[in-house]
Amino acid sequence: MSTSKSSRVRSSIAFVLSILTVGLAIWLFTNRQYVLDQLTVWSYHPSASIASLDERVQFTDKGLFTFYATQPVVAEPSEFNSKCPRREAGSPILGCYTSDDRIYVFNMSNVQLDGMKEVTAAHEMLHAVWQRMGTDEQTRLAGLLTAAYEKNASPELRERMKYYERNEPDAISNELHSILGTEVAGLGAELDAYYGQYFENRQVILDLHSKYNTVYQSLYSRADQLYKNMETLSASIETRSTQYDQDVARLSTDIDSFNNRANNGNFDSMNQFNSERAALISRSNQLDSQRSAINRDIATYGQLYDEYQSIASQIEVLNNSIDSFKALGETPTV
Image 1 (spheres, rainbow, N blue to C red):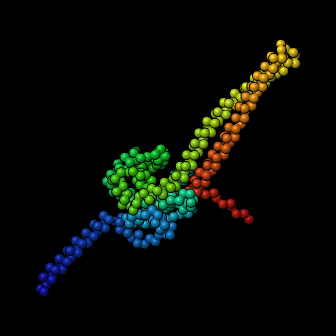
Image 2: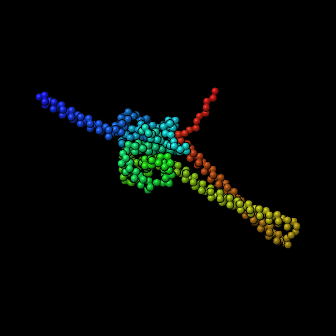
């Protein structure tokens, strides 16, 4: 091969390699998040608790890839509180997606709230998806999410969103993206197809949410009904007790008058005496019946109150089980 021909071949190869190098550099730049995620996933080794979350949530490969790219941790209270500071003292949080692209899920263990860790993990994974999303796609989804929210939001969800309006007003669409995707059915074909990229069967995660949410809702519903019953019964007892006291006072006055008249011989006949005496006895018997009925209602009110307190205690136990803030142990003494 002549020297000139060999030189041309080397030049062609060098040109192709330079083109490939430039192309690779452009691809790496435009896909830098994917490259970083892939490197992280290759080096990440999920714990048994994280692996069990995936088994129940049933992420797609894409969903699991994003989840593992955040190096998720099921954290105990001390670690969780340091990584996921709450914004309102009375509002415990169950998980967080941090600014350094990490997911932490509080290791709650109350069996009555089975499924809560899984839903929390899926919720936080969707935050990571949102963070990786382009502005145009976020804008497109924000419109769909807002429409779905206005159509499907329960009073409880609307109240819940007020928390984000107070604390994270710029993250409303981001939060709707996670909340609706893991908790609300009937979002429409377009959003259902979108979430299908991340969950093999979104109904699985919706069922997990419904399972533990029903525990709370049944307790709150019963507590509300008990409270209404107690309000109604209390008003009735108060009104009837006031009337009873007034009627007793009048009867006592009339009995004293009757006795004075009898002692002073002020009755014209025995028929008058017996007639007035019978009327007083009848009034006394009626009041005694009213007293018994009121006392029965007071006893019923006590039973309702005891049940109400019991339910309040159950709700408190549930709330404490998902609160990462625990009472501090006693200070050691010498």
